[in-house]
Length: 249
Length: 314
Ligand SMILES: Cc1cc2nc3c(=O)[nH]c(=O)nc-3n(C[C@H](O)[C@H](O)[C@H](O)COP(=O)(O)OP(=O)(O)OC[C@H]3O[C@@H](n4cnc5c(N)ncnc54)[C@H](O)[C@@H]3O)c2cc1C
Ligand SMILES: Nc1ncnc2c1ncn2[C@@H]1O[C@H](COP(=O)(O)O)[C@@H](O)[C@H]1O
Image (cartoon, rainbow over all chains, first blue to last red; front, side, top):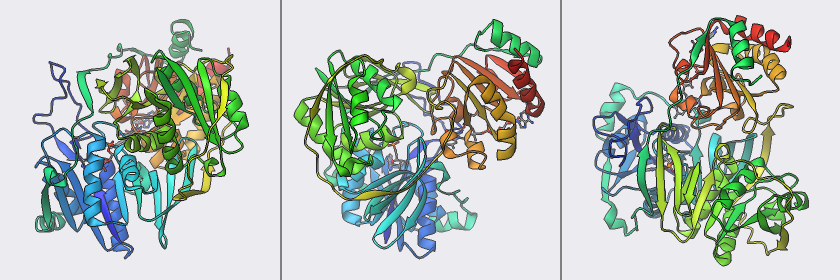
């Protein structure tokens, strides 16, 4: 079984982003970039399936600029076997990514695609579901457990009320939630090895897919800041304030 | 102009997120239809038609909608949205809506807009990105937009309506997936997403036993829902559906009490629109204090029981 893992290059989760002064976007110059944390979890899951002998090959795919090669190398260092960069300078929105991934999946014929549940920059939480729709595949989003059977995948999902387990016919799409696993750290030897693993660059234009943005992001702004509050000395003062000032108890 | 709200329900009860979605749909200025697809779902249909502001309830009753599986529902919604000439399809930004809406959008070949918190005009929406650190205004020229809307940004629609009910034909059963198990957390407490008061615990509680021993009495006294940070959930103190944050539940209660939570941006993303925030933490430099209206630097194991008895005493 071949597994495809789409990975996105995003602003590192520790960075507090700033809006550009002309409101046209977010300041990305000199900002630390990383592999999307949920995609790290997806890679880990795929690599574990290969280590267990359930999967035969793990292919990491990223859509974006040449800089995403760095993200793919991170996936390779975690244990992915090879990588594909679908290269474009166009701003990609989830539907465009899903279409590009559909084209890659058409060539690669994986039995399973594991996406992250959401990219922590656009917070869209869309691409996996869109790809599943385009492929006509079943989907299990927000996975916290994945078990491969014969021709099926059993997936436990984190839903609003608790947990739900679904059985999907393969080929299928799964999106990884936080508690699916704890990703390993890439070791130095594995980082070195990753440099020699195959990384193919595929110009997006060759895939004949419409990637034009459908939505315009016309203005970016910082949300209204909360007014700083006060520190109270003790429980008695807290209760007094809650009762007489805030009037919430 | 017409908009379509996809009802979230368990055949018996309509989820509150759908009431918030109706309010968002009303902002489009046209008529609002609600699609209830289920099996033996008369009770949910009856509730939907009583929601104020709803013009029609489209009812689809078939065995393969007994569970809200995205594969079958998306194909149905695609057909209903296209044939009905809707300007927008909306669902709550719940795990149900997030699972379904993008799949619908892709079948319709349109972009989806997630976690909408503002609708200034049809085709002009506000939503948070980067864990709520940036608000972006999104414009669309699409003939049809697919949206998930945040419950915290739109009031729940009231009752007193009497919409017409129209039964429509089911779509195909694709039989691609099935539900084989469910482990729902049961609680007598208010629902986390809609509670007026939320008491939330973090890694500082140290264990699940401590979590409940310290926080349950306070939540009982305040009539509060219980929430948690990711660290508390990851450590197994409480189930996953307690998680508040960028990738958990979004809450905006009148009072949010954060106990033993440091205040990482991913946590703040889920609760910073609460009206009044109280933080109890022994570290005076914990970032949670920067957004707390009332901060108490103290050991939670002493402060919380004292707070509970003080509130209970009056
Ligand atoms: C992709 C991604 C998504 C994430 N999504 C979320 C999310 O949705 N929600 C979320 O919450 N987090 C999320 N996180 C995790 C987030 O970054 C933090 O790691 C997490 O919120 C920390 O939880 P905490 O505050 O409970 O733990 P800590 O940061 O460890 O804080 C514990 C606090 O308890 C205090 N404390 C300890 N003992 C006591 C005591 N006796 N009395 C009083 N105070 C005490 C300490 O001073 C400390 O401030 C996400 C992270 C990533 C990378
Ligand atoms: N540019 C991209 N390249 C590869 N995978 C992506 C890209 N954008 C999104 N994805 C995948 O889709 C998931 C969800 O992203 P999003 O829908 O943007 O929140 C991510 O976790 C990735 O697995």
